[in-house]
Image (cartoon, rainbow over the protein chains, first blue to last red):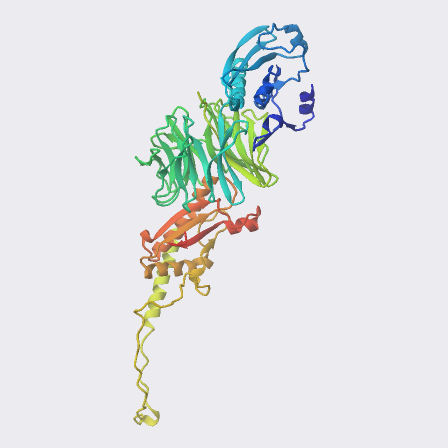
Length: 426
Length: 180
């Protein structure tokens, strides 16, 4: 259909409609191999919410790279979740899955959204959910519906309700922003005239640790998003940088120069219980815990060029992990612990590499040339990263198989960088 | 290797300083022509007035463009961390200032160009500022007087994306307390 033709021509698809308020606009380039065709019919009465829930659901599903939203012409009578579904009719529209729903205003001023998901191939009702919401919760509700559909049909959790953090540079001003995974609903957590780098989410999604240069040198802060309270986690003599949360949220691994050089320490988020983990004359930085908490992966140039190593989470003899190429940095372990994403320099280009930790196969999954700061989605399906196009910093997301790509860019004259994908929120 | 070179350099500096002091001897007395005793020369007596103990408007050598102390940036070659010979007089002058002003405090900020990981660049900038600090202390500054930090690639002097810009951004900047 229309969408497939666009994709086949290799053109760029702009999903602009549901993102009118978004500061980041999303552009999808390249597509997944097998995309499940799904018909998300406009929810009856959804106009009363001021935005189209069905359009947000469809855009979410398409952004995953695993779905193709079908165009649905006006139907009469307009079907809702209570309708008896004519499966052959939806099969003839080439839909493998169908979503029907409705929105009703309640006497208390709130709204009720109901929907049902159908498998038109197996001719099955896959059930649905009813939500009660305020008008300003329409987007959040749409993301939850998309998560439900994704999990039912793909068999893993969706990330549409998760949030991302990133830094926007606007002239001399730096803003640490939080937005929905689709770039909408951005909020500024911190604004500064000095750089902000390396934001990382606490495992419970309530706090960010980051490095701010507001004291004319790098200092690690922990920032509670709900009340804006900031505590200093590491402000020792010298440089304090590269924070990483332990999976249980009890510790931060950081890079400090207090004892000379750049070495990895652990510290409690309140700044207590400092402990040194590495002791080398090299740069040891960018620590990241494995999801099981057993290991810390980090960047070190102890072998002459920056490479990725790992050591036991409480210290110990490091083992080298990357061997190909002369510049491998910024290690990130996938949520299932099986893959290592990192930045590799390849003929002068900085790109995202992916290393299978079991069979040691590596592949480069981006075709840009100034990639930085990769960040796995909590379901491991996508990797968010910073790159540069046309001299501007933008965010890009690529599926872990490298097939599906999208770009998130902000208003002209701004740079976006340092993305961090937040955890699942219950 | 680099430490040895710095040590040799600082030894040379101290030796030269010692030579300068010993050559500063009073002139020998000179007799008049023909060996006759010289006639006494009358001079007007001068009453000395000393105001050095009072504060007065003296130029701050750290801000005086004619003083080497107003030079605050050391630039580096790509992927290099050693201070080039052309900056050694600058480092020596600042070390001397710290020696002579024990209450002075210095912040050295290491910087890199924009290529590569921001956090690894913080490490590379730290290697530059640590190197300058080491020279300062070898030349007699106290460890407590000098703090070395890194700004990584975050504070470029030039916003360009070519070698001309990058060479301005690979640098260490010297600041004194009150300036940061």
